[in-house]
Image 1 (cartoon, rainbow, N blue to C red):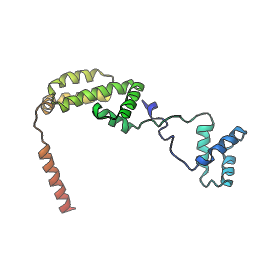
Image 2 (cartoon, rainbow, N blue to C red; image 1 turned 60 degrees about the horizontal axis):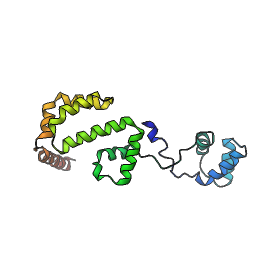
Image 3 (cartoon, rainbow, N blue to C red; image 1 turned 90 degrees about the vertical axis):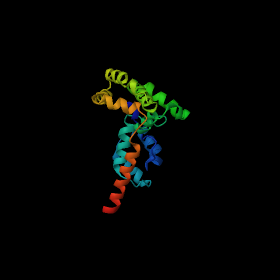
Image 4 (cartoon, one colour; image 1 turned 120 degrees about the vertical axis):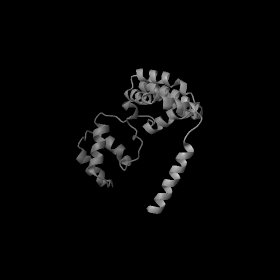
Length: 187
């Protein structure tokens, strides 16, 4: 999964960008001394430090090429795609999500568990919870197994919360309003 997020900052503009062709030309000419290249760039008007030139030479010119292609999605973006109802995703997001899930089988398994859990939440299907916990407990995902174990501790309350149409939303709203008033009055 970590390989999905490498090179996320590859397209970020830097002060070194206008000088990169010169660095490549000098490298091809045989000049591999970062300090000397930095001195030459300073003569051309480069006003930033040596470290950025050195790092660029280490990462790009010495054999670790930058990834080419579009930026990979961030973890936050992939999370949003997974948590969004598939019908509400734009076509481009849906295609990118399929690509990410194809590249990471563990994430694909997790996404299917998340979708089935979301279906139980939105359609008040609490009677399916024991079956979901059993399937989630057998998955090779420690965080999901832990979540399933914690749901199992108070299974009756979880099933009731997912089955009954009543909720404590109104009460929670009043509690939040009272807390806000107290903060306003007492600082």
